[in-house]
Structure formats: C-alpha cells, structure tokens
Length: 422
Image (cartoon, rainbow, N blue to C red; front, side, top):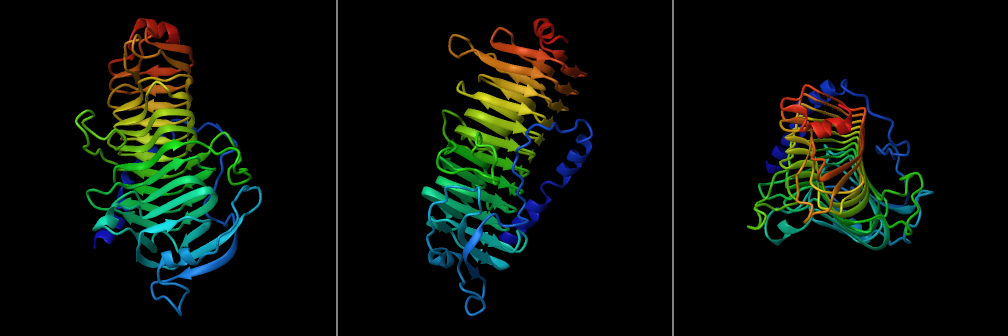
C-alpha cells in the first residue's frame, strides 16, 4: 500500500505546475543558448549488449533470475569504457514488470533496463539497517559505464548514489523517497566521466539531485555523441524535480544546509542544468555553494523557497541564461561569487525580490561580481525588481533589462538605476 500510495502521490505532484508552465511559456521564448546539448530519451540504447540477462518475479525458467542483484553478480566484467565515440560493449539486464524489494550494488559496467517506470519498481528495504542503504549504489575505481532506465525507484535513504569514475545515463525513471525520513533523489560524488541525467521525475525527500565534490574526469573518457561538450561532466536535462523538504540537523545551522533544494551543487564544477522543471522545493530550486563552471539554462523554476540561490565566496563562472523564474520566494538570491552572468531570464511574480543579494561586510567577504546582467524581463515581483548594493557588488555590464511593475520599486537605489540605465 505504501508503494502504491507513493506512486499515486508522485504522479500528481506536477499537475498544477504543468499549468503554470503553459501559462508562462508565452511570456518569453527559450533562447538558443547551447547548440551541443545532448538529447537522450531512450529511443535506442547507446551501447551494444555483450550479453543480455533477464529478471522477472517468477524467476527461472520464465527468465534467467528472480533477483536483480543475482543478475548483476552474474554479468561479466568488461574493459573500462574510455570513449563514447562509438557504442561501448557492456552487459544489459532486462527487468520485467513487477516489484522488486532490493538494495542493489553495482561495481561494473552494465545497463539496467526496466519495462517502464509505471511497470517495473525497485524499492529499497525500509526497515532495519538496510533502510540506510541506497536503493542503487554504483561505484567505479576505473571508468565504468552504467545505464539506469525505465524504472520506478523508491527507498528510505538516497535512491541512487554514484561514487567514482562513472559515465552513462540515468533516464526515464520515477524516483520517489518513501516515508517521512526518506532522503530521496540522486547523489553524485567523485570525478564523474560524463553522466547524463534526463527525463526523470524526482520527488519528495530531502534532496532532488545532490552533486558533491564532483568534477569532470576530462582525460578518462572521450565524450562522443553521448555528451558532445567536454566542458561539462554532468548534464541534468529535462527532468521534473520537486517537493523536497528541510531536515532538522545541528544547532549551529538550525537545519541541514543541503536539504530542501531541488538541485544542490557543493564543491562541484563542470555541470550543465538545462530545460528542467523544478518546483515546490522548501529552500530553493537550485543551490550553488562552492560551484564553478556551471550552466543553468532554459529551466522553469516555480514555487520554490528561492528560484536560484548562489552562496559561498568560491562560486565562479555561473551562467544563468534563458530561465523562467516564477512565483518563488525570491527569484535569484545571490550571497557571494565571481563572474556570474544573468542574461535573457524571465523573473516575475515572485513573493519577494526578483534579483537580490545579501549586503555582506566587504572586510569579511570578497566583493561579489556580476559579470553580466542584461536582457532580462523582471516584472510583477512583490519586492524590488533588482535589489543590489553597488557598494558591495560589482556589476560589470548591466543593460537592456525590462524592469517594471515591481511592488516595492524596480530598483532598490537611484545609484543602481543609473548603473543599469533604468
């Protein structure tokens, strides 16, 4: 009953939000920002099966195995995947429709292929010590290739945890945290080698997607058609992410700082986040803390605590391009960072400021630098349209913004208005 209830709940999370997307899509057309975005929607496997093993609830002789882990253990080892220029040869495990209560460990290259995210369910155990284990744990000490597609994935801890040198695709899954303590989502750590996360529905729990200490392993795996731009090691494309909550943690913070965000970037570089719908997250849609070389483009961020929250002085080279940031608390909330670009976004109907920044003392924190603030539509916010202090924030270029009809005012100071030409 718990599983059925979770499936029903997660399916209905984004119904109201989809209406918002329809209404707001007419407000601004997405910019042709990046012509090399990989587009994978599981029409065809980007690999060649070295062997195909089958799993079904009945087990042999109907199929090869009754348990998924037994099929994983039986799959043969294959050489490290050093290029996606041609389809790599790795094992495929086809999982028939049904519910499998397992916590999976994957330490080799292979492809998990479900019958569809409404048909094949893998649920991590929810009691005892296993309740703290990920539903799927993947680790590679040399470049391994993985695919996780066509599955409903639930559990009480992190649903998918990936560590080490891993490349491949997580696509077309429904990923749902179960129970009040469910961590949820996808957790990535390590020098990942070109991983694509696309077309998933990720809901509930404390985190949607968490990237911690992640950097592209540029010299390990050639990207090829799977990912055609080596600047970004992780691509998060066309997912729906929502309903994360804060977790009470320690007195010094009051709450666990990395919970309650749709996507969290921490000690991470080389990430592209594009064309996602991110809504109803407690603290923010996207949180960047100590992140470098990050592209955030053409996403819709709606009804989050903040749409996009940029914190920590070491943020560097974050590009916010062509996003729709609508009906959040604050649209874009900037603490500190350098080389931030904010271009071509629609920022409207937020409950506080459209764009705001903390006024941090310059003797304790480095000067925040916005490299470019231009061609944005900023209107109908209940706070200021743009609330930035020119004394603590250096704005290199500010022009061609359409700022109007914001409740407290379009600019928080006449100095800012003069700087931006308003």
